[in-house]
Length: 229
Image (tube, rainbow, N blue to C red):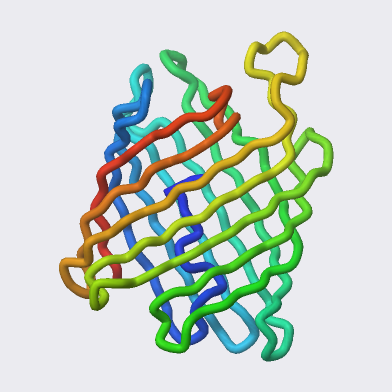
């Protein structure tokens, strides 16, 4: 699910597996009560890996059937056989203006930096840490620190995955031309019960501070289903 989704599932953690999944979440957060679908893909190759996800929000009050869309794509180029890699990323999207026949664009963002990844020999757990330069459209250059993790336990029946982002971005929540916050935090841990190799039931909790027009700290839980191809 978006940052987000979404989450960065297992980006840069696996070297021998290909993963693609579709998720559907119902968001119980304050002023939400809508459905989000997510498509994710992670694909390694001989020189690195590629990850992308796209989120669609449905049933937002004051919107048509589909209200928002958000997209991220990232590429890690491995540095020989070391755990380090060069990370490049693009984020963007659009949203529907409530009760108006018009849309707005989510500010494009370009990121680049260094990735460090580790995973257990049996691929039961792993993590990735990224230090990134971040350029948001029409804003000052900044930075972002990203952490990604996954843990499979209970003989593979349970999975705990997620990401955490911390970045610098000036926010004006009152639209008065003043800066109300300088930094943003977002994390989306997910807990899944794997019914079989394809189907899972679970939940995601969006933990954020000064994110998406919401000032201060907010907690947004969901219930979801996931199908892994």
